[in-house]
Image (cartoon, rainbow, N blue to C red):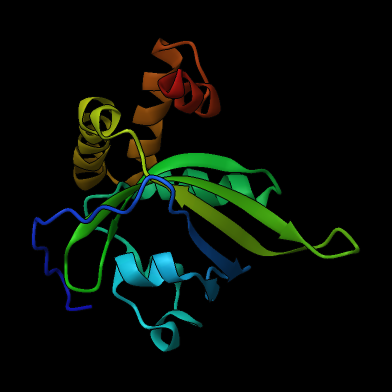
Length: 170
């Protein structure tokens, strides 16, 4: 991927497609399905072993990723709306379900993520303005301030993050 190249072009994938990746504990990709490879424009050779943040879009708040990582490292699943970047600079939105993976002895060994097509109206009316707000705070005062801002928003809604995400699905 070339630095900060952004095309402004949104990629879409089919409603019945599911993007699937698996990572090790450090977030390096150990498995990627064809849907992921196609939408991200990554070859399997380039994807396997790469850090999952190879598809990170600069307009995705780091605070949301911190929340995601904190949650899955605790052995809990999380749902989140994520803006990703393909290798050519196009972008695509996903509704992600990230779960920890355990071995037979119940040791955390990695993570599994399934991503589906998000409700585009919900993304444009709720998620994009929220993420723009968080990103603005993040750029001005850092990731911790962005997380505090998200906490304030959730407190005003009298919801935790999980309840907020699921309230959008109703």
